[in-house]
Image 1 (cartoon, rainbow, N blue to C red):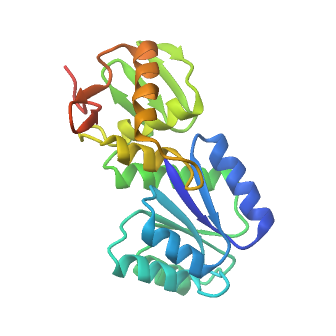
Image 2 (cartoon, rainbow, N blue to C red):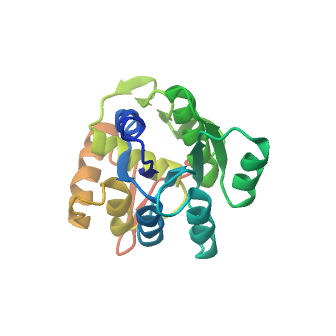
Length: 221
């Protein structure tokens, strides 16, 4: 999962980035509204964490522009403003959730995981595909009750496929959501990561649709 973090307070941005990466997510950080609007308009993010009080362009204007351009990724708004009217305005502008500052990091992560699940049509925090379980809260993977250790890249790829179970995902799309924007996105590297996952989880866990991409069954036999 790749997250856009738009936050101009350096300490908050650093703390949130650390927490997101520790939760197995790739992160792009921008410091002002113009950069946020541009990044969200040209990159494919799984979600955005958006501060309302950004310089150059305020967060609500950024959000309205994204939605006007049909950018549908979920957005969690952060703000130091506590008025209920502003919370309503944020939701009406297209936000999926709202968290006032100061906040507890665990609450931010819980709310972010929830909007990620909802946007992918998943309700439960534990994703399931046959005997494979992925606990999004604790980043734990088990196969037939046995814990499985994955690298960060392996976890991100598996989590993305399980969030989008039942849909064929192209290697180019996986590469876009697996890496930070500053890293090279080689779709050929996806095949290598999938091969490693199959060695750890079984050859039939991830299906290959030749010429199209990879599929995690949503209701396997």
